[in-house]
Image (tube, rainbow, N blue to C red; front, top):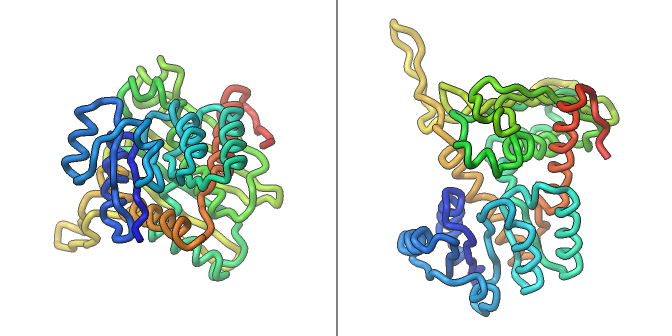
Length: 330
């Protein structure tokens, strides 16, 4: 029996998840809701589902789970609402921009017994999973250093920046989750620096567009993260993990993985242009994992607690920038 989904939010990431759900033989997209009726109608036509109101989805007997792709400031309220309605919940990161509000939301999830998965899609990328598998197999020994590079091809519009919560909560939060995923230990302290080098308008809004972060665990394991809102050569996503016996790395992915060598030199196709194509397999895999958890009782991961811990690291990074020092993680 298929898991029956409703999609809340028909924007860019909503379309990505609609494709992942409809591409899974164990799932069916029943309905979509969006605050902009035209957006909901367009997605419903593309993916052959109904447009329904939030209230109708909440009360629907033919919907088992919701995928929350609405603006961040609605996530916690919607999680609580659908937890009380007895629906399983997949929510895009972050749960909220406030650590206190996230904790309140997770308390409701626990009280209702609802199933909640947070959308840290990079854990499900085949290359990144292979890095984790090599670590788990002991191929590189004990993890000592992790390097994460995440650079967007260009900055988002000012109206997005104004509501995003800033680079650490919006962009680096994916890297904080990957750091926890790869280090094998919780982070004990954070040091961050941040600048405005790409777009003055971002700085005028109180945010940064360029950042570097050092994470350290209690045993001394380290992770270095570099972020930029500008990579003129494409969507830059790389991982390297150094261990006591060796190193494992995941290089950038390209739509076509070839290399041409001529007398003019070596040439390769350009990188993916952004996350919608770079992580298409990861988005499909995370929905598959969510369905398995609902149908077969498999463990849900990433959890709401994973979302909370990454947000705490983002808050520590902001404090580090403001106070120009290492910050202990509470």
